[in-house]
Image (cartoon, rainbow, N blue to C red):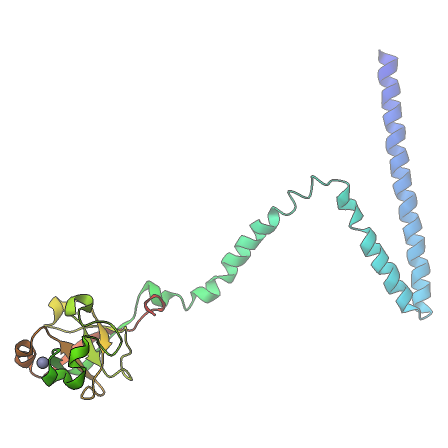
Length: 213
Ligand SMILES: [Zn+2]
């Protein structure tokens, strides 16, 4: 038994040294080839060297082929690296992103009037039952406003003291009389619109976010 073990150890040592020697020999060979290539390069035949380098590079990927099961962990780190890369790349687009996170609200001093869907208020548009944005007048429970869309585009939300219980309402309509810092509140009846009259008020304005468009 002992002799058998010893024989095995010796055999292993021989095999290992043989492999090492072979590797060393190959290394020497490559080195000598490299030197010869260098001399060729010095003599001006750079193309040859480039070809040789290409050949070396082509030969290099042979090594991973020995362990075809091994490459499995190799691609795994790539997504791992990709996710932190994306995470690190994301902050730059995320810098403008805070806009939807906290919509900017500003206040505007506005001339606020009121209207309804009658012919007196809407003229020839009265029968359409639709706002200039295309939304029906029943939108948002009939609580919306008309604005100068050069100042406040459709989809902008406003909060007008004394209208819609102080809730945010959308800009869905516009009108020839509504110019500049002016709002026209939609009312369910002409009487209510008349009762509102004309008021100058601080109005809260929330520009439409990307999700509202
Ligand atoms: Zn009216």
